[in-house]
Structures are given as C-alpha cells and as structure tokens.
Image 1: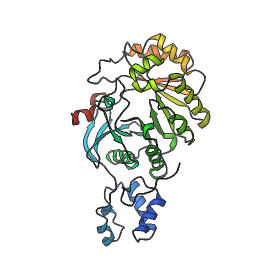
Image 2 (image 1 turned 180 degrees about the horizontal axis):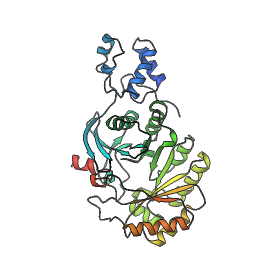
Image 3 (image 1 turned 45 degrees about the horizontal axis):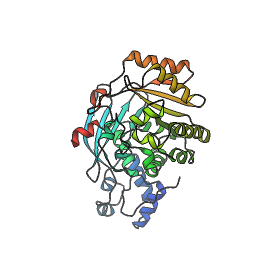
Image 4 (image 1 turned 60 degrees about the vertical axis):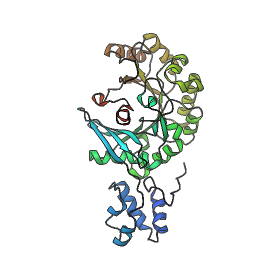
Length: 345
C-alpha cells in the first residue's frame, strides 16, 4: 500500500510524517517543522495552522489560507445510552453522518466512506438518499478526530460501516486506514472495513494482507432474496461472494464477519437460519445478527427478541460463531442516513 502524494494545495490532514516534513521544506522551513505539524494535526486536533503556537509568528500568519481538512459539526444528537450521532459539514457544503459509540472499555467510531451510497439497498435510509461522491482520505480521518475531540477520549476502534460502500472508494479508504494506523495510532486489528460485496474488490483488498477485519453485509442466505434486498447483488452471485471470502481468510489469516440485518417475516425463519449455517460452514467467520432499525419509506419490521434468539440458537447448534448486536442510539435515528435525511429533506 503506497502512501498518497500530498498535493501542494490540498488538505494536510491524512498526510504522513515524511509527507509533512517534505511539505515544510517546500515552504522553506526546516524538516522538523513537519514533525511538529504532524503532532499538532493528530494529537492536538487543530482545525487551522494558525493554532500551532510553536511555529514562528510570521510564518504562521502566512499559513491562514492553507487547508487542514477538518469538517464542522452541523448537528450533534446524543442518545441516553451514550451514543452520539453527528452530522458533519464538509468543505463543499455536503454533509455526512458519523457515530461515536462508547462502552466501558472502548470508544468506537462508525465512519462514512461516501456522501450517500449508490448501492440502493431496499431497507437502508442512506441508499434511499442517493449518492453524491466519494470521500477523500482527509474526510475519513477527520471523522475519527472529530469524535475523539468531542468525547475527550482516545478512539480505540473504527468501523467503516457508515454511509457508502467502502470498496467502491478503496484507494481513499486504504490511505485513511494507513493514516489511522500509523499517524493516529489505532491498531489495524481494531479497524473494520464493511462491504455489501463489489466484484473483484474483496480479492484486491486481500492482496494488501492487512490485519483489518472484513465485514460482509449478507442479509440473506440465498441469491434470490439477496437481490431483492440488495439490487447490486445481481452482479455478484452469492456463491462467488462466499468463495471470495474463503479466499480472503486463506490469504490474510483473518476471519470474516458477516452482518445479517434481521427483518421480521423476511429473512428470519428457522429454515433461513439453517440455510445460512450451511452457506457459511467450514471457514473462519462470525455472524452478527442485527435487529432492524425501522426507517421511513420502508415497510420492514423489527424482529421480536424470541425470533432473534431462535435464529441465533440454530446458528450455534450448527457450529457457527454468532451473536446479536445490541442496538445503540435507537432513540436517535440509529439507522445510517436518517439524520442526514432530516436535515437535507
């Protein structure tokens, strides 16, 4: 994975220490100024270079127009369980969603990879909101630093499960992962990249042999139902997707997580649980059952606790590692895309 080249007039956030040292030298400053800039970007979380008090005053004044690449918090919606959903305004005026999810031992940030999403999954608020563009590396990294600053504690885990399809923006995602790992200091094993499946991209991701977790949004145990729920699945047969996941495990040594949004009366029957177990048997994986978060413009329903538990028990009896993901922030439009929809609609 090659480092991105720092554009002379592009945002500085996302750049590595060597890139920032080279940038400082291009400004006719000693290289160590780039090291100082690196510290102020990633440890102090500055929004403007004029905040860097260790820089000479005259030079600092001349840097006022240099873009750091930070967003603005347009809305902040906390939930009683401590989860906070943010609407962030980007430099071009577009908005994205980010979520901070605290527990007793960690702070996780759910990060967006695109403005909107082109995949148009039938039960997803983001997909129903359309697609605008990919995010750049600095816009992905910024989300983590924004949540970190707002919570006043170090982010330990990052999941690229927010708005958008990360594997359709793989280059910027990989650059951001490299920055989050090497510059922000988050271990690769604590970073998850989610996908509904893009032909060829899981194999490409595997070629980098990263230690990140791959999470595949499955949502159905058969191709026909999957195409109903995820229109793009018609271009990526389920058997091929699963084979690519098996190859990913073999190449990287990392298990694959399968995200399965449970929709009452749609994909939650015992027969479908057995079919899912048959589909995933025989390789390192973990199934996250996610009870559906209702959204407007979709008639799907949240399953009952009994339905969920029965489904989980069948997976366990078949020998699969599986768990139910506890919903966080349900009171605050937890389904990704809902908050953005309120503000843009």
